[in-house]
Image (tube, rainbow, N blue to C red; front, side):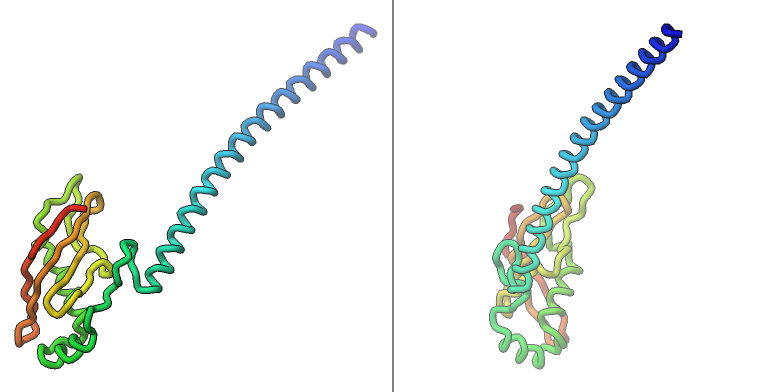
Length: 166
């Protein structure tokens, strides 16, 4: 009888030891998982803060480069020009027209990307003659300085003055 009790005690001891080892290993894995989640959380918070800062800058009328977002140098000049040239909304019409002319970008896309003017917020009308526009293909980007002219019938002619890959 004593040997059965002793065997039961030994079995219980071994079982308790195995349970403790399993719990310790599980606890170690949980600590690693918690650390990984905390790192991910910090990274997400940093991205959120950066996004919030960019949003605040956009609300102030600035893009991430500090340039004014779609605010022409001389709004009064463009509004009076609208009546003469027949553009209903000069800023919107000029930007919309430019976005349809990706052939003005003198660079080929890379890694399967297509160079284009993807963001309206990164096209700046500087004067009634000049536009600065950011272009990209998702991998590389750059800037174009363009000269434009609106014909009497409201069509826009474009000429690339200079460009560079940023």
